[in-house]
Image (tube, rainbow, N blue to C red):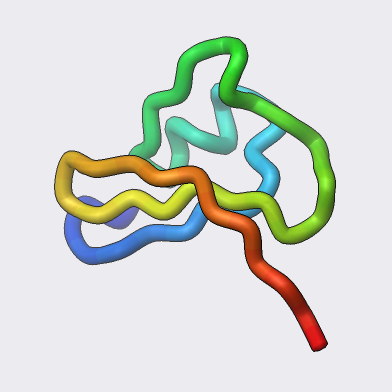
Length: 54
C-alpha cells in the first residue's frame, strides 16, 4: 500500500479496490465509468479528476 505521495485511483468500482490504494470513499463515490474518471489523493486531500487520451 502506498502511504505517501500522490495516488490516482482510476474508476474505483468497489470499496476493496479503494481501500487497497489507501483511499476511503463513501458509497456514492464509486463508479464503473466513464473511462478516465479518477480520484487523485495527495496527503489528506481527495479530488475527482477526468483524464483525456489523445
